[in-house]
Image (spheres, rainbow, N blue to C red):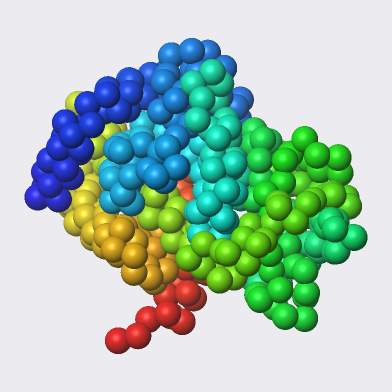
Length: 395
């Protein structure tokens, strides 16, 4: 309860400090619920949503403040507050909203100032929703992102990009991709480079959009690149005057450190909604449960709330370190692993208890159960996060 009170105070203060953006965010929270079930059913977002929301607000959600981003989302801690609120409504649609998303951190970390400004200019509009995407995962590499097979070969003054990428969030919607490829496979992670690729370029093709079980609106996309011609200016940091990070794989890690706490916040918000709904159901309809089941469920909900507060604490610790400019890879992995494993446990237990409702198409319990498994996979599986924690932990 104390953490809830603290979060509400911080959220109220944030909206009070930036009232115009606060109103735009409240509009998002007001209109999103109408679109949660349809977007889950169709794996897409109804275009009419964009007529009701402030697109200038949404398009800039993940852009740094000095490049035209939002005051209300200028700090990682504030972003987690926003994402937790949206996660309470619907995690699938929340991670599918417009903006550069996961593609922004590597551009900011690796790109020159000119590249950063060029990349964000398309997002600084209120006329249409604009998406960016981050493409690093490959069909043959599993969780080892350093074993990239996508090649970038020199061809005169240009480069040719060839290979495949998979599970690109919002890939089918994106107009720009940040694609990671190897220019020297024998150098491992230090041979990796990041390129900004216009999706309309010749040679870029969508192989398929995955038919997801959970987080269905996110449109995970598989791409093929067939000798896509790129210029040296498309390589992030091509002049040697890089951003604060010196290699492209570090830029990818920066993206994960940025997004994993945000995803954990979405998961935490969804878990809060599940526990609130379970408590409400206990108060309003106990006819299908025995006294023993009711007492057992009440006890479990109390325990889950304590564990959820611990998961939220890990998330907030990670973003505090991120805002301080410190490395937060350990904390980001801990936060994501903790939140996703808790969500799966809650989903399993409550699905059994509310089994009738969970079997109804479009019901909260059915979506929550499907989404909970996707939580574990997205932005690195739970097993991979725990492996990273084991490698990074230094007592």
